Length: 337
Ligand code: ADP
Ligand code: MG
Image (tube, rainbow, N blue to C red; front, side):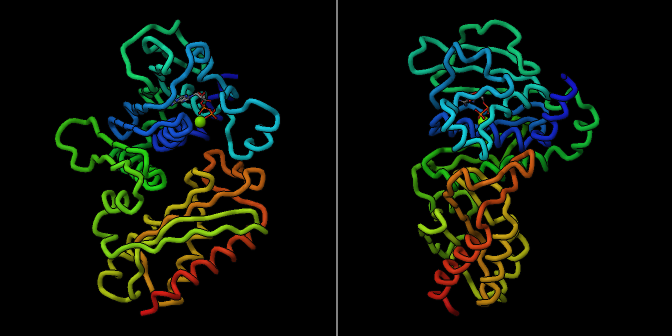
C-alpha cells in the first residue's frame, strides 16, 4: 500500500510548485490574511508556509496528513457540492509521502502552539507545546527524498523558485485583501522577493507585482448569466494597438500573463486564453495582462481530468465560452484604436 500511496502522491505533487499551491489554498480556506512562503533550493530543500488563519485544533492534528481526512466536509450534502472540486483531504497526505512535514499550529483558543512531525500520512510523535502565533506554519523538507530520480530531475532550482513565485503572484492578485510574501532563503541578495500590499485593491496589487506592464490602466468586467448559472469578474490591462513597438515586446510574455480562476482556485484553461487572444487580435489589439475569475456551481465542474486538478471542464462549456467571448467583445468595443 505504501508503494501505491507514493505513486498517487507523485501524481498530485509533481514539482515543488504543486505543494505550494495546495498549501496556500489551505491557508486561504483557513481565512488567513497574511501568508508568507519561504523556499530554499527551489523548494526542494525547504518550503515553509506561515499563515495567520484559524489554525488546526489539537484533536485534529494527528490526522491532518491522513489520506481522505478533511475538516471541510460536514455532511453528505457538502460532499455532493464539493467532491468535484477536490476537497478530498489528499494534499497533505500526498506531500507527507514524498517529504518530511512539520506542522506548528495555534487556534485562537489555544494557550500555546503545538508542533508535530509527519511522515507517510502519520504523525511521528505526540504534538509538543511550542512557541508560535495564532495560525499555522507548515514546513516541507527534503521534497522527493524518497524518489531519487524525480528529485534529481530538477536541475534548475531557480526555475522551480520562479514557478513558485509565479503562482504566488496569481493568488495575490486574485485575493488582493490577503498579503502574500515570497522569500528565498538561499543566502545572498534576493532581489526577486516580494510582498503584496494586501489592502484589498486589485489594481494596486497588479501594479505592485507586475509593474510597468500595466501602467496604462485597466478595463474591469463583471457579469452574471442566470441561464448558464455562472458569474464572472476580472480585469484586463488597457489594450494597445497590436503592432505598436511596446506591444511587440509585450507579445513575447503574453502567455505568462493570463490568469484564470474557477471558484477561487487557479487552473489552466487554454481554450479561454485562445478565445481572448482571438478577440483581441480581431480588433487589432494587444493586452499585457488579464485575470478572469469564474464562479460556477461546483456540481457542474469536473476537475478530475488531471490529478493536479490543474485542468478543468464543465457542463455547457461551449455556451459559457461564447458568453464570455461576447462580454470581451463588449468590453473592447469601447477602446477601438
Ligand atoms: P483538504 O484541503 O482537501 O481538506 P488537505 O490535505 O489539504 O485536505 O488538508 C487536510 C486538513 O488539514 C484540512 O481539511 C484542514 O482541516 C487542515 N489544514 C491544512 N492546512 C491548514 C491551515 N493552513 N490552516 C488550518 N487548517 C489546515
Ligand atoms: Mg487542501
